[in-house]
Image (tube, rainbow, N blue to C red; front, side, top):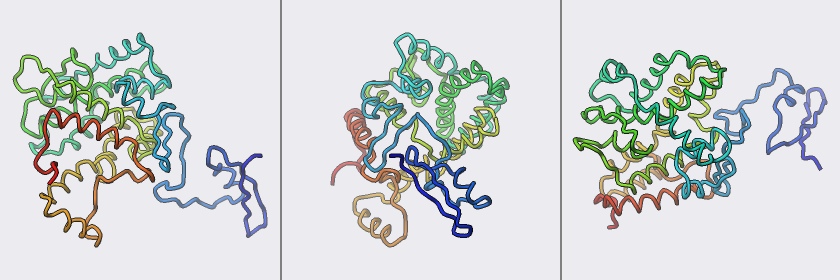
Length: 335
C-alpha cells in the first residue's frame, strides 16, 4: 500500500493526495492545490531542499553512514583521502585508483608565491586564522580563472584536487601567522595528515617526522568531519554554487558559515568556555549559571542526534591515544 497524505483547502473544498516518498512529500504538488501560499520554515527545520545519496544520518538512533558505509568502519579502516574518493565517486577506490587519486591531490599542495608574499602577509598580526582562511580560499579563484568553467568535468576535477590539497596549506599558513611563526612549505614525502602537522609545527628540523599516533588521530578527525548531511556550511556552498560561481568562491562562503560559533566555531567556543571556567572549583557555579540562563554550555552533543553522536566514541578513543603521547593538561585530569 502506498503511503500518502490528503490535503484539503478549506477555502475551496478541493483536495489533493500526495505520496510520501523517502519520508517526505513533494511541495510542488502541495502548491498546485494552494497557489501563492508559502511554506514558512525558519532554519529548514522540517524542509529538505535536495535529495542526496552521500550521507545517511539517523539522529534518533545515533547512526552516521557515508555512501552506505558506517562511520565506525571508515574511521577504523580507511584514510581521509580514501573517504574523499568515496564521497565524490560513490565507492571506495581500488589500489590503483587510490594511488592515482593521492598523486593528483598531492600534486597541488603548493600555493602561488604571491599568495604568501603579497596576500597572507598583508593581514594584521592578530588576525583570526579563520578569517584569513575565508579570504585566502576566495583568493584562489583569482589564480585559477579556468575554474569558472564549471561545466567541464576535467576542470571541475582539478579544482576538487586543488581545494582538498591547498586548504591545509592555507590553514597552516593562517595558524603560523597568528603565532608569529614563518611559513613552512608542504612536504610531499609525507601523507596528507602528516604534511599538515609538518606545516603547523615544524620549527628548524631538516625533516619533520610527525608522531604516527597524532597523525592518525588527525586523519580520523578529518574523516569524521568530511560530511554531515545538509548542514549550515553545506547549504551555504550549494546556494552560492547555484549561481554558477566558481568552486573557490563557494567554498569560501561555506568556510565563512563554518566560522560561526553555532557551527564549526563551536569548537573554539568550547576552548573559551573551558578557559572561563578555569578550575574544577568553578564548574558547579558555571553549570548553575547555565541553568539560570546566564550562559551556554558548549560542546555537549550535536543537535541532530537524539540518542548519541556516533563520532563521540571514536573521538574519545583517539583522544586517549593522543593523551598517551602528549600527556594531559592539569585541567583535564581527574580531581
